[in-house]
Length: 114
Image 1: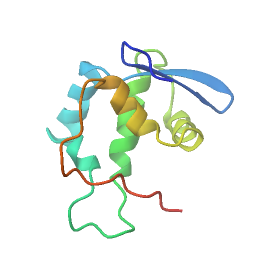
Image 2 (image 1 turned 45 degrees about the vertical axis):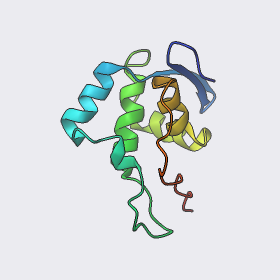
Image 3 (image 1 turned 90 degrees about the horizontal axis):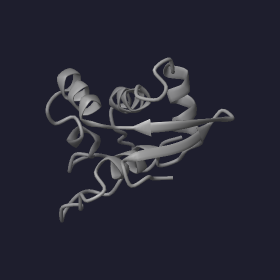
Image 4 (image 1 turned 180 degrees about the vertical axis):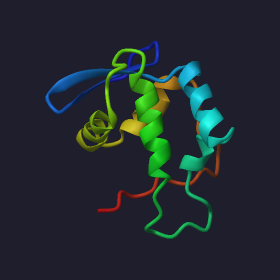
């Protein structure tokens, strides 16, 4: 559930987690993945039906969001959060940027590939 301050609370693996994606986390992502790191999550116009975003970015995004309240969380916690909370990446981005509106013409979110 989203919090007005940008906090997202999730459950995974029987535990509660507080995710926070702030400026420091975004800055780290930009430094390691490029200035356009969030745009890299959007499917290109010529993407096929099986396209999925770079999972490394998603792992880094979730790991960054855990650092504030769960600094000892490892990549397996990220796996549990991702698998137990469908749509967690979009929920996290919405919590981090609550006033952002989608620009006209943005592509639809890619379908999850089994």
